[in-house]
Length: 248
Length: 195
Image (cartoon, rainbow over all chains, first blue to last red):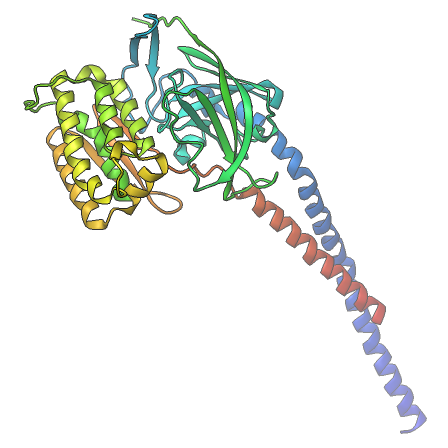
């Protein structure tokens, strides 16, 4: 190849090389910022996820209009007619001959509230039943357990990402108050247990022995579904019946 | 499981089933007696509690003769079936909670069907409607007892699902974005150096 041809060839290669460099530089300048943005956004999401989840139960309580409307009011329910009457009964204790009032909830209706101040839970709403649609509204009262106020094992369930998010913060010795329109039950936490999702030991009736069992999914401190449940077990400290005034 | 839940749920519905019948049993009874009978006949503990909750709430709707009939109906229904499955040397009333659960779950399909049919037919005569609904998520069915304008699902005898997956998805998506973006930056930087 002559010198001239060799120069020509070399220039052609240099031109091509320069053009591909330009393309690559253009791609780099345009693409890299997006890639950096994706990394920053990913880190942002991961970093803020936990604090957001910490506040999520409170955001739900403040901004969830549905919950506000259903507390204590007549509710539109799929489980009973809109004009279904209150189920109220005067009950006499055969041993003490004292009389108290029971108000029996309809499935899916607001039933009472759950408070454990040491764990940052105050007046968390309790609804009757543990179907998924009920657990979305609040803590669920398991209808295979005793009515609130009756003697036996009172079982409550709640989602670990909403209403029972702070349940794992409960400690032995903490006071839990369950309150309805007709009774106020005070328990002291005696034990924290974990058990398999197929183990019904702690949700079975105790027939004659007062206990509170409140449980949620346990994923070793992380949120999400799990085959394990964590429960607080409480011993009854006080049962305080309320005077119930019924509107005529 | 579905049929077992229907059977024991219908123990509660027998209270309604007996409302309009003429009682053939002279011995009066009350709602606590019915609950005690169910427990003595080996009914699962959580279903005994559900029966107790139902009868306590509706106790004024039945006469003592009707409660007597309920006791007899439970005895006839469960003792004929339970006896066959009882552990040797054990009475139904002496079964532990776990033994009751195992017994109910261990009944063969034919026996479950027979009990279910009898209970459904009896309940239908007295306006008690028992339905099963396929659950929207997961496996299994929900059993619902309808009476007097009220629908009461029978909550499962196992702990409810109380977790959720939304945050896991967010974490996974964020992690993927970081990984892919980081890979992209490395590749582009490498190409730049080569050129």
